[in-house]
Amino acid sequence: MILTGDVVTFDAFAAALFAELELPPCGACAETRLVDDLGFDSVLLFELLLVIEDWIGVLLPEALLGQLITVGDVYEVYRTRRTQR
Image (cartoon, rainbow, N blue to C red; front, side):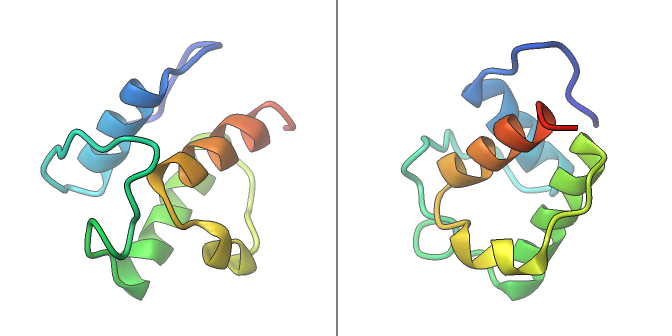
């Protein structure tokens, strides 16, 4: 699923992300931590990075994984990098 439209809300983004990763919807808020709250492991974090790359059409550095702590962090990367392409 690729998100479309000029403005994608956080809720729409989170719902699409969890659907794409085949995870049950969790009602995540921006402060929800990927590892501590949702149990993401290194494989799932890398898969998340690949999904975001696919959605924005830009390769992202693997080093970015260390900066993705919360669902809000992932949304900000999507939102800011999407407008830079």
